[in-house]
Image 1 (cartoon, helix red, strand yellow):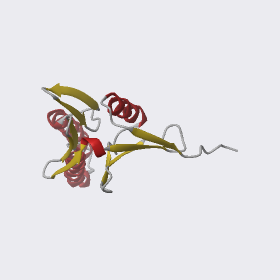
Image 2 (cartoon, rainbow, N blue to C red; image 1 turned 135 degrees about the vertical axis):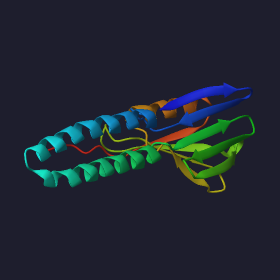
Image 3 (cartoon, helix red, strand yellow; image 1 turned 30 degrees about the horizontal axis):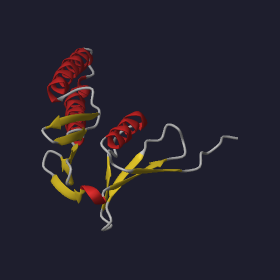
Length: 169
């Protein structure tokens, strides 16, 4: 997801991965799966297949761990603060926080269009001093194109490089 908002003289471009469920809805899903699997496990246990009961707990633990890891990955945020003098890039996760400052006059961008039409765009920002970073690595093609359009709208010069399209036989 790519969102643009203005706060006074500054623009904030917030980039976040798509997610269909937040943590509270994940807990509801985990509870529903737990009840469903509990009913199935006890149904088999009542039919005499009692060794399935420990696997019920193992299945729920694995599902909970997978949901937790996915939620941590989807908690990432990238923010670009743009004003007349500088651009500040922030990367935020649950525990990680990084910040990089670029002078606005030195900022340039490069967009790499990969060979296949469904491949995501690779967007990089750099300055004359050689510092560079990739932004929006988790975005799909459509969202990457929206990011590029918003960067252009905000006056960031972007150079587009296309790789050769692979043809099928």
